[in-house]
Length: 368
Image (tube, rainbow, N blue to C red; front, side):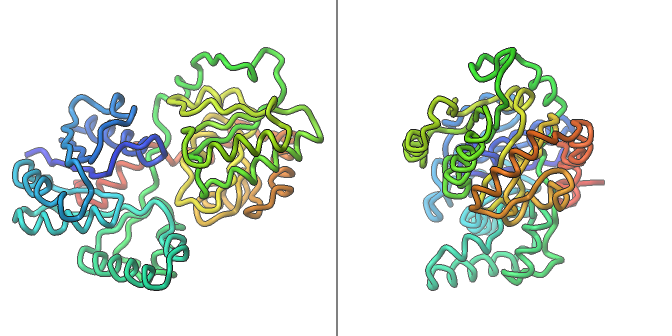
């Protein structure tokens, strides 16, 4: 009997989690597993990139009560061997639905960011409630998957989760198609035959990514030399504020916002340095993608992914969070002392989709 693996997420967002889920599904299908995708919404462009063999179950809502009945119907009809979620509230709803359905599905919760960061941003009553809900789920299910050693350490040191409850499985970032996609043509005015050096950044326009610090850093670099910057990502969230900041800094002719880019690798293959200015990360998929194309990276030393990926700074500079001058210095260092592409690619060679799926199957107890 073929094992069925179910993945439950609100939607396939255009951020890192959606892309990683897509990579997982392709490799699991390739290995002969039946794969189900449970979602509340199907309006993401990433739905056009999932395998035809994947069964999509539209739950319609993530509400903890109203999602129960479609979840119960799903578990009774499909009976998945395991189900992976990336939200605590989804896991709690699935826990109840599995109990009502009387199926032996094993539930797993993947953690993509340090939970302590989220808790620190809450009021005391909300922090206590979330911590209690999380620990109650963790102690009952003991099946947590952290996307990095840093996320796992955060759960143990700051949340109190027993280490034996956690499996660390890195994200399925590097696919066999990356270099092929990187070679595709790119029509952008900043990438002509004799273009100025280009700083590349990418991500959602949110507080987490701290693009204001990056813009200030770029303006400092721009004072010293001719340089351009491209910032990829959905034009939502804080986009209007960033546009206004670009005008205030007087760098509007040197900064481009192309929006969401389904193939960022063609930008990475042509840029000169990738800059990550985040206040926190659970892993840092885009850093691995950049390094896999041979693009140098400078990153903030935020909790918890960049230090792990950059091997304590061996693969690229780590700078303090919120420090635009330090970030500018790191950018200029990489422009002046570009490391060999082969060394960068070798440093992230373990972050392949094959390696990641091996880890998930082991965590699921499906590795033989």
